[in-house]
Image (tube, rainbow, N blue to C red; front, top):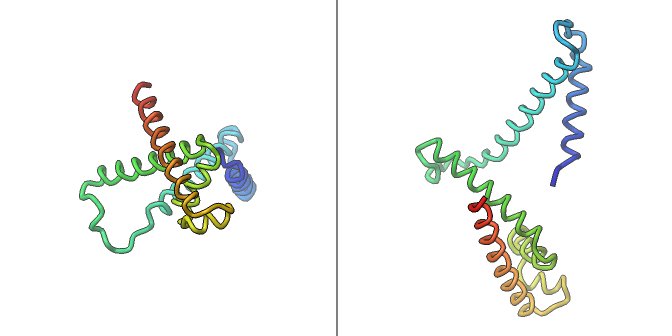
Length: 150
């Protein structure tokens, strides 16, 4: 899902930077090109900061880190693709199954907590979770097959 609020924030940053730097504009190129250059730099800065934040979980222990930098980057990209795919599968599932899986795996809720929230028995929630996992697995493999066929 596009994050329009982030785009709005970035556009405001570009406009503010252009306004503050307007005295430096020399007129060598069209004003639109100059503003697009600012936008390009602001966008690159945004993505660099997101990448830094995503990889900044360094606790000093590098035993998990592959020696080969390319292998490490590939591993990060694979995890990112898997997370994106998982979110897409959950979004496409029956709403109650998707909700249960989000509660279980993103919010770390117990079956007891979910049962209390839903007004169901703990066993009932566990059965629903089992069905949700089966549906997730079926949709995951179906999506995987479609990706390899395309």
